[in-house]
Image (tube, rainbow, N blue to C red; front, side, top):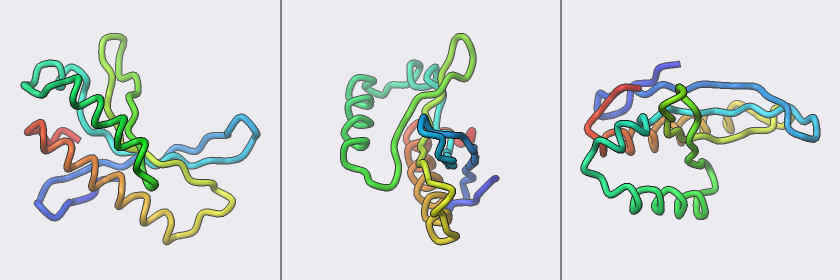
Length: 116
């Protein structure tokens, strides 16, 4: 799905259903941010950025940052949240979509891109 952010930027959000190790159905709501190759080519202090992502993961209760394979040579930074399908309601899904799309767009804008 494609969402328009307040600043006239767009942000993609994906939904993926999967089973946990215990067999529970989980919906992963994710939003792509930036390619790892783009981070490497930027002027951003990579070590500081990766530490910032780890700190956010430790503090955030409604989303997390992760890298997912994009190709053999590249990875993609995503903002994501997992929801239990059995207990998920419309309000929870809406909050998850809002959280990942807004933080992904904010992070993406730091790199001066609007690819996703």
